[in-house]
Image (cartoon, rainbow, N blue to C red; front, side, top):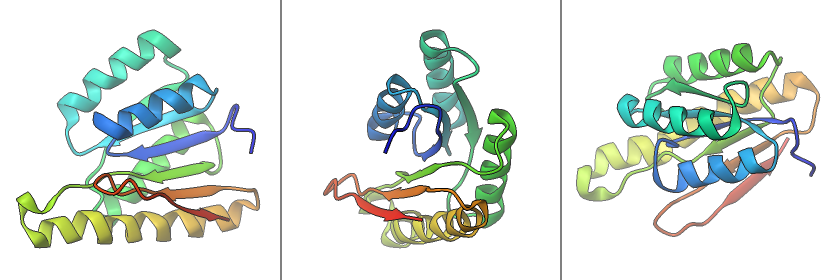
Length: 148
């Protein structure tokens, strides 16, 4: 799949693997919407990537992936910023380990992924174009791809 000029949302992309995914996609010509619950780190990462790739190539939208309304706003703002009807790629990357408690871990790592996938599938199906949803787990780094 040629990814040049595609639009991607990457959750949990203020740091770590999500940030690395964003850099790699930007290098490949993808326009990237960074997203994270940590606004300070997200804004810092945005500034760094804007300097490297340009303001038209990257944006940041804060989002708690466990909140469906925030996830919908994330899609709305990304699509508006990049002037597209639908994003091409959703990378459900946000995740935590069990040190924060098993309920919080399950809400972010399972429910957040399901919320994002459900929203993306609905929007992507309506768009009629080839899109991808990528779900990752940072502990096992086990990617799961869904082509729409």
